[in-house]
Length: 163
Image 1 (tube, rainbow, N blue to C red):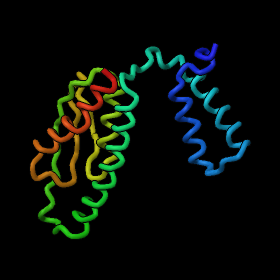
Image 2 (image 1 turned 90 degrees about the horizontal axis):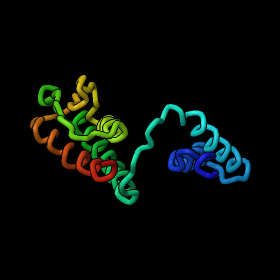
Image 3 (image 1 turned 90 degrees about the vertical axis):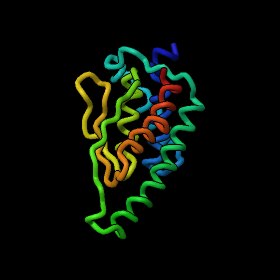
Image 4 (image 1 turned 60 degrees about the vertical axis):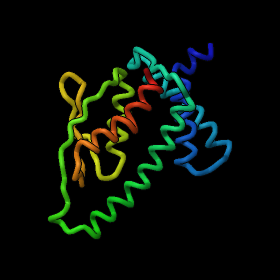
């Protein structure tokens, strides 16, 4: 019964938390609206989610979120230093090809989103076979190091979470 009403409980929980962050009020009306949205949105989108994403470790997902938030903070500082203090002719932008071993579409989307959220990098494209991401980096004196960092820092964690 509960599973039928909330086909994606993590999405429902996420929607409730997001709603409270958006309205910035802890009132009963906000709770009612959050519960309505957390019920209706997953029910409407459930037909489009044929396979429920499998999470192997919720604590690993939470630690991944903390890691990404920390990396975003550090990347903001690094990008500010590059933009404000580095001479334009010393900035070495580069396109980096990152081969991925992830199989889950949710994990691949999360990896691409993580890269794009981190200032100084953006996921620009994905190969037709779905096994290579094309990343643009604002300053990449060593593109191989950026590729290796993405694989070791993010992809390995996502493999533990989703596969």
